[in-house]
Image 1: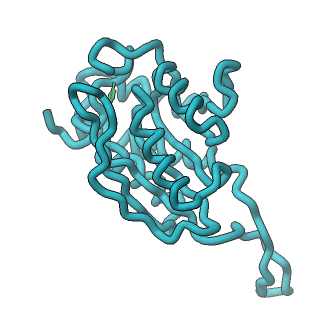
Image 2: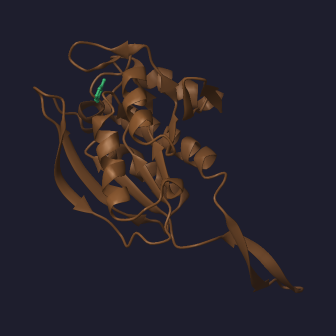
Length: 216
Ligand code: URA
């Protein structure tokens, strides 16, 4: 995991498998099917890395030989919350890793003129004492990501119970995110060069939602 001195709560997951798969996703002629499969595979690998610090407790279990206090993840079931619609492409991989997780949804679209987030749906599991993984492949302007964290915080979820998982981020978006929520950890596979005049990430991979769902 690499860090950038500008953004102390940004973690860049540099595992070679993650980087290799991301390069293939960036290619303009990667098919919808392959793009979707790679996103799921990357999310599984990233999910493994970001859950490294989940607190453990113990519970007594009986093996065929003896009783031991065995390590188990502490607290309530994790919640996975994709930001619609592209986040759905990541929640599948996370659910494979944590099949008993609860799943919420936050629906936000980007106003094409202002690039500001417009919320149209929020459905969440009970928020007390639960760790939330928010996911959205692209952190471009950072506005949707900030908004999604705001939604959780307004329901009383503390910073340390929120992890944000993205694939690619632009420095402009990370700055917006970091200024708004400096203590929420943001995990990405790549911090790209910049945003272009249409708020697309460069080099990026295009419109993640369109590439996942095969729309235009
Ligand atoms: N959303 C995308 O899907 N891609 C970008 O480059 C920026 C925002």
